[in-house]
Image 1 (cartoon, rainbow, N blue to C red):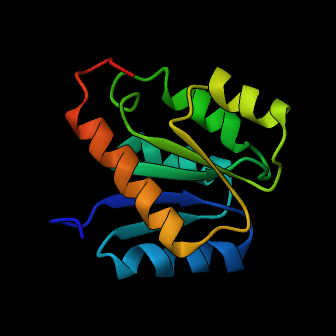
Image 2: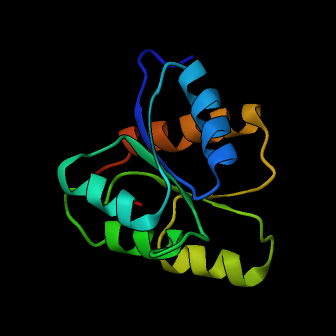
Length: 134
């Protein structure tokens, strides 16, 4: 268990998945900010700096790959771990995730236990890494 909850931005256009992610993460004491598309995620990020982001790769307006790519180019946001969520387990998706410098890629359907461990891992790795040392 983490010593304190983190603020996690969850962007997914599927309300059921967003709700499930919010339930899983809030059970660990995290504050979850749920948004339904990429534009809402970017709007949130203008004024806020979460501890981690979970982004669906396929969303209306702006997809998770594009958000990740933009975030990694902004000094204030670039060190925030970004986990991409996808239903596509293929080379093209993995390559694109690497190109946009995603910190992790999780495949749907996901397990709550696996998700909790992966979130904890990327946040803790980020907290101990030297700045700019991805």
